[in-house]
Structures are given as C-alpha cells and as structure tokens.
Length: 148
Image (cartoon, rainbow, N blue to C red; front, side, top):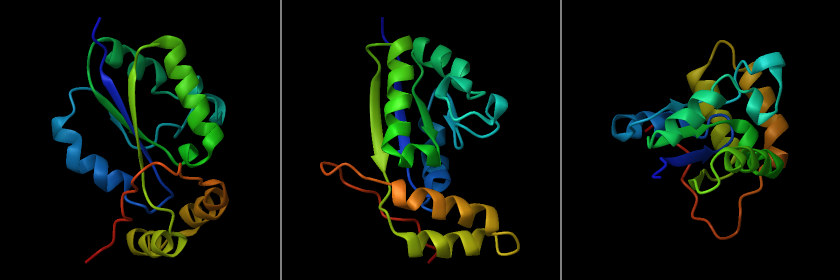
C-alpha cells in the first residue's frame, strides 16, 4: 500500500511556518495544517486530541501528501509524541522534518510586524518555546522569514 508523505515544519512563532506552507500548498494533494494543535479537544497537548488527527491519518492512508506545522514540535518531546502517534497508525509512513533556525530576535520582530496591535499572545508562546527548541545537529535549517 502506498501512503502519503508527511512533511512537518518546526519553528518558533514568527519563524515563517505559515508563509512556507502557503508557498507549497498548491503542490500538496492532502491536508495543509498550519497550527496542528490549535483548538485541540480539551485544549490537550496530546497528539491524538488534535481536531485534525483523524483527518490527517485518513488522508495519508489514502495516499495524499500532507503538511503540518505547530510550535509544540519545537519541543523534542512533542516531536517524539507526534512520530509515535503517527507510526502507531501507519508504521511505514515517510516523514520529513523541516526546521527553521532558532533566532529569538528575528521571530520577535516578525511577531511585532504581523500583529502590531496584539503581539502579546505570540510573544508569550515565543518566550515559552524558545528555551525548548532544540534542532537536531544533522539538519539544514530554513532561514527565518523576514520582510524585505
């Protein structure tokens, strides 16, 4: 059976995950989910409690390539939890992790640019996840998106 490929973008708030997904959305046959854990059942961090989890599994099983992103994946435990949950459903799935660089100042600038009136929620998440964001040594990072 041919399953779809799952691409996962990992980066802090303001890194450019949404911008990157918008660039490739037209070439994806399945789901493109920018905030995978947003509005999870019971506001739970558990992967399977994402409102998108079942639809993602079904799309991958149907052979559709999918893309997801979420700041929870900055935490290595969040990545492990995602990989275990997906592999429990589809053991032979092809997963590709794409990591944005870890640059607090650039992300902070982007947050202020995109939400000048209400940056506080995203800044709080940046402060929460920046210390947890550990990028594997053997990957090439994506530069933080910056307005030119």
